Image (tube, rainbow, N blue to C red):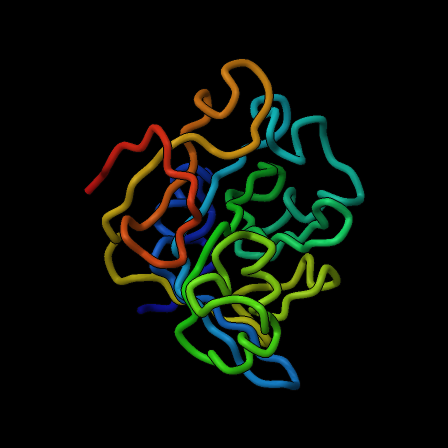
Amino acid sequence: MVAVAREWFARDSVELAPLLLGAVLAHDTEQGRVALRISEVEAYRGVGEDPGSHAFRGMTKRNAVMFGEAAHLYAYFTYGMHVCINVVAGVPGMSSAVLLRGGTIVEGLELARARRPAASDRDLARGPARLSLALGVPLAASGADLLAAPFSLHVPASPVEFAAGPRTGVSGAGGGAAFPWRFWIPGDPGVSVYRRHARSHD
């Protein structure tokens, strides 16, 4: 694993997303540290070009972080109760981000278990809401710099093998099949169940 500069994240979200696979994201809290290997991601583009993106209709108070510097955290509520987290991509004004859909705990397993006591170890961070809960990331962390405390983000020295397929829950012309921007590590226990229409990449 290597630390990279902010400029490394300043690329299109569809290009960045698979490069984040295998990266280790850690979050320190008063209770301790939890770190996970990113196993599954989805790329979202911006204004006018991606109907599944929160930025599709322009900047709002909610999505303003997506329009800012790369490698910052964009967090949002889903279903009024769960927090999902994203890595901002591109350059300021580009409004793109990569949703962290799944991961595998590699440090702080006991703390992650305490945060999700009913879950099996495999399911601790297997899904976007579960991932943020296992890491202990609150909605208030939106806008935080992922390259500075209490976070750290290290990426693989070379890209890992991955597979790609349609994003989940995307509306608009062609539905999810029109946006094959979901990427995952084949066989990784942190990947969610949905794997239809996959194609493999080296």
